[in-house]
Image (cartoon, rainbow, N blue to C red; front, side, top):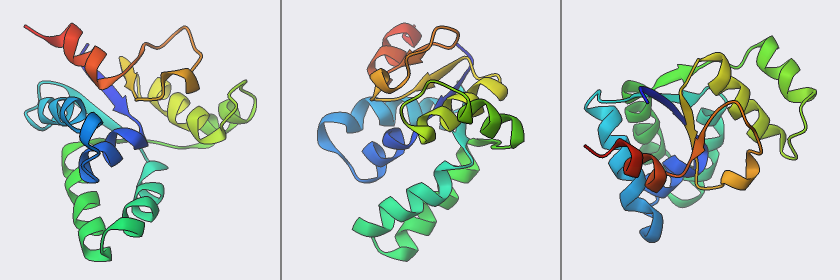
Length: 138
């Protein structure tokens, strides 16, 4: 796999150092940083991440994190098509639908999340960071 869209919990696991989830997510982040994998983040994730990070970190630190993410990751668009597909989808959570269709339209090879059950889909692989690392190991 050459590209992946990472969802919000992936970033929270890293930057809030959620102990049991940190290392696999950080491993994938490192692959993206080293350009071994093209990483995407959904445009919608930026304001949501800021809100969630700033609840636990200072504003300045939250902005610095988002600046780093923006440098390392490509931004997958949220446009009319993504919204229309999300509104008519069978997803229980609208935000998950937006993340998913943003990944599809960016032509990502997979979506990386810790909450696989949120994405009951057939045409785009949905993997945990651990699963992604296992299939990407040399």
